[in-house]
Image (cartoon, rainbow, N blue to C red; front, side, top):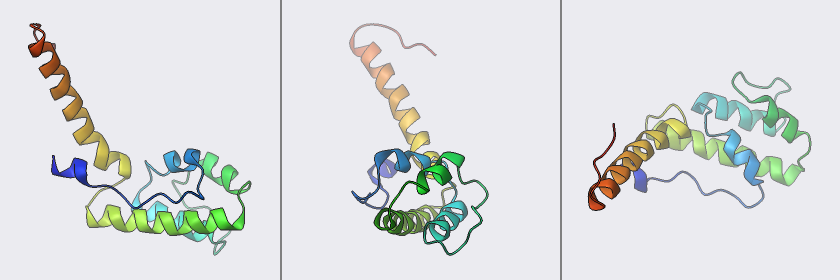
Length: 116
């Protein structure tokens, strides 16, 4: 249960919700590249950066891009500290197991048998 309590860096309000979802499957290396790309330190998008993210960046203002750059850098550091390949990899394992456990318990409490 310890991992469930771990949360990543705070999500700045300046970043639209749909962008947060795009960072979930990115590795720390890709996130750092996205940060450089958002700061316009490079014109080449990093490998692994979703095309939708590149397209979304074109529509964002400088304040949003600066918030994205800071957030993905913090997220990359958080993932490295937790030895995780991505935010999805860090959260999915525990979430699936808890969901299976919860489903099993509900069935037991209501007199049913858990399905495998």
